[in-house]
Image (tube, rainbow, N blue to C red):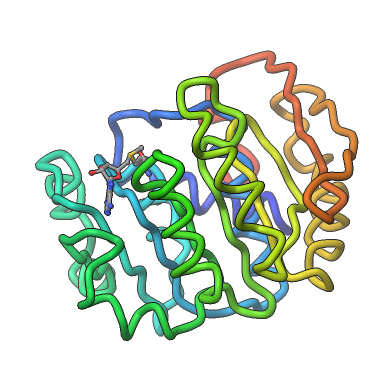
Length: 244
Ligand SMILES: C[S@@+](CC[C@H](N)C(=O)[O-])C[C@H]1O[C@@H](n2cnc3c(N)ncnc32)[C@H](O)[C@@H]1O
């Protein structure tokens, strides 16, 4: 059951990082659902994130790791708040959190840039050139059945992010399948439809939050599912009772 996996991910997340989530509820739910769907379909592989800051999304990925998987985190600096949460992780899990304190442009990431990941999150520099560089260097790291998540598309504060995404994505072979709040999720063409259909099928499992308005729009060569939630609540712990 998907809702059981979602509840487990949330329980683990709040066990380690209990100071709230710095982004909208529906974004967090989307991560839980996508990571749970990957688990359900036994899509395996490591996870990578560029732009960690205090670890809001980094720990969402961390709690979804299987025992043979790790997460590569890249940021110019490790924030004390991130380090404090990382200290709470069990030793075995902490050893699979690989923090690279450097720029996404750093030569030392050359080996990582050759690898494939089941989930890649680009949320580092927010200028047009930053995003062009990050997509250019790391879009090829998305496994055939993996997901690329791009932060801050259509965000009014950083128009360069949107400009870069629309310029760079068409040559990556990736197409969008989900847009929730400011995050755009992409996959290789044949998998994008699979993820989209699974997400629609998953909607009843999260209806505890109210009715998720959803529809599709064509963009960037893909049919993108848009989730727009009319929330009854802001309480993510509603995810928990189904496993209790
Ligand atoms: C928007 S924050 C990331 C937010 C985080 N994903 C979360 O869930 O809260 C952006 C981060 O990207 C980092 N950053 C900016 N430019 C970078 C670069 N060129 N290489 C690596 N990290 C960078 C910043 O230090 C900052 O911590």
